Length: 163
Image (cartoon, rainbow, N blue to C red; front, side, top):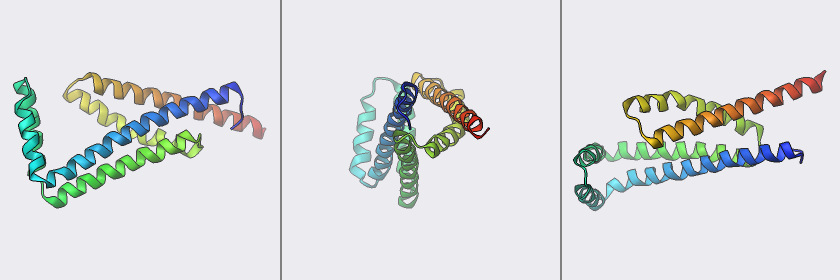
């Protein structure tokens, strides 16, 4: 990558997207370890105790349902879910590392991976709106917009260079 101000600014934006991907990877890794912690009965008992201290009945009921579901899963299914979360985190890490280095394939991978999640994020918003869900959707749409613009610009430059 050359060192023009535009190229440096572009690399900075890619690195900001990479940091977002790294943060998502850490969150997903934590969720995977959380799933594996259900093998220890004292952890679930502790979590149920924490839920009983929540101030709102709705939150208690909702989170109790989640814990009941997770506690009822077989060890094989829990491991499968945990491994899937780790694989998903791996995708975020690969995207982040490639974007940090300014690699073209990472931009394409991020464009594809992020665009496939938009329908899921819209579905989640249809179930219930929250600030976090809206922010993740907006950030992902901004990332998509930026990457589409950047890839089109690169394609146009490559086409001009061939003429």
